[in-house]
Length: 237
Image (cartoon, rainbow, N blue to C red; front, top):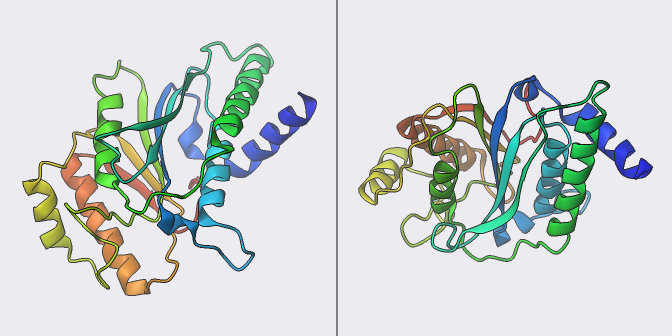
């Protein structure tokens, strides 16, 4: 328990940012489980593994009263949702924040338990379906709560409806029209979006930028505010 508490405190130091102000938070985390995030960096570490560790850091810094839901992004994220974790922290953080620290430690323990067997295994990536699931989780929020969608993915949508992975460049207008025609734009009004760990492994800078432009346009149509879309995983202060 002492070791786990120390790990939680260390993670908090490295990941806390302005996202985690002392306000009630409704957080949905989408974790990419597709094969494209199995790419490795110079240290031979999978992007997927870094994403899993980043989720750990996020869970270790949530404010008291937060509600969190973690879903896997698969090849059919909407048809067969893949819930990984759902939890809520106590509203009472304790006089010395001891209750909050205990809640963080339990969240981290549960996440490590359910993520230990996860792998980047799915050949397709249904990000659009995962966004629809997230919108249903956010449906009808009580007043006074902040809504945040955090996505750990390379953002390379790859299904029959829309394939953004194979082209060398993403044509924003054409792709958005196709998504709208397929009724795949959810209601994410009031939601803050953080797309983190959007790696560019094996792709050009131009591809990465056009992919980003598509998603910025997509979230604008959904009514959300993109706070960060980054190849990095640190939450901006």
